[in-house]
Image (cartoon, rainbow, N blue to C red; front, side, top):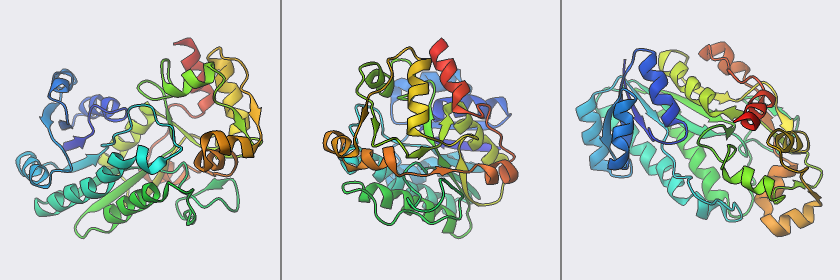
Length: 314
């Protein structure tokens, strides 16, 4: 099939393009940077320079490419994300998830693109009540941390638009916390740097449950969504949700950092904000059973334990 990928040089996209090519698909790979097109050519794709916020440019790109599938992986998350003011840090990404998604869906409907796959996120999406592990059918959070309301609204807009546009078989991939090459949990990545400086503590007992997704598995799930699976929403996470108090010390040990400090919730909130305090103490993990059954996807990194151990050897 012919696949148009946005965000093709991002953390997921740069792993996704080679996997699609290897699977025999023809790939039109979109980037916002002319300087990155050579890299896409080397990966076996046809590169284009595209700003998905430009409505006319998106329409023209889809008209020219006439893909069978569009995969929307565009984000703008590079840089030093403090997450004290989430909506500020995610402002451009929120636009890509709203206006960018709508531009692509409108063009897809006009030019007969039947299948549409989009990147979402589950880490702080589910309601912070009930059991520790959520399925796609569980309710979402209706009380986001102050300063993150726009970000949650943008995610919900994307999911609603992708799964309800007439004529489009929309698939939403709710990724867990990314780690691996090109992410902030990788050698040289921001979160590992904070860990080595002992500036990434266990807050308030660390009871918040996290689900992780290795970046290669994130890309593999998108390939699976191109090739099969019913329209809908899928959690793309590994097999082992775990509380912060368990996985953070394990990560520190794996990469040779000192054991993280522990701080009370009030101090964590004071230092890093309410968003981080909730992520440390209240969030829920997710089940990947639906993705395994309906997409036929199985994570290569079934547990973050193996993936973290590899980070320590790299």
